[in-house]
Image (cartoon, rainbow, N blue to C red):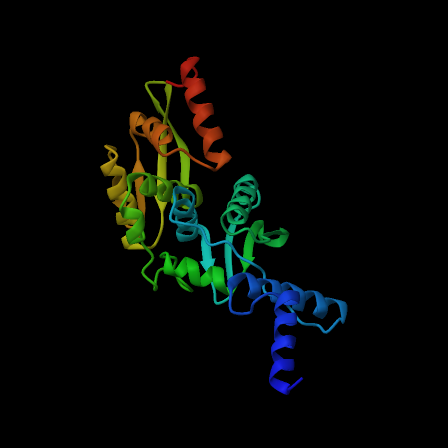
Length: 260
């Protein structure tokens, strides 16, 4: 048998064993076998984790809103920092959201000295994907953080982005004041951020929903009408139990006559 025929027979035998390297299935099979050999021989070779990259969706839009609020994107990591006293449940929600979108491990650690929970995902590829979808790397204000263009194309995306944004940088509060010896309480919402473009996106989006936002201070947009606040939580909703509890308590108290 000449060398050429021997080489052909060897090549065919290799294809039968490892798959055709010229096809996707062949490359996948070869990769699996290579990884198994590396593991068996303890070579220290590290395989990259398979990552799921989601389509544009309501869930992805909400994540971009969360990142625009309490998120930070660095070269290799995506993180979201929340208050450990008030937002533990929302931190767990964000952790589950990242896992659902990218199908990779996501960590959540408590920084007791700072009263903070930090949810983080370490992956350069996820970072690149999120930046391509409109997340801002590094300093968000200097980077011009705002609502990404693709989110503006659908009402459902805009609503989800608002939800993520307010759940992180928003607050629900109750004003108490006395008139003629009678106590009155009024509920309010405030969204605070130092990015002028993001504040304007938030204000305009509320107006588009038929609400009546006001901005009497440089960095905060308010909703003060009770009907507007009820409508916001009916239409936009919240994934942060802290906000939902405050709303439920206020309106249940009012219904029973506890709020003037």
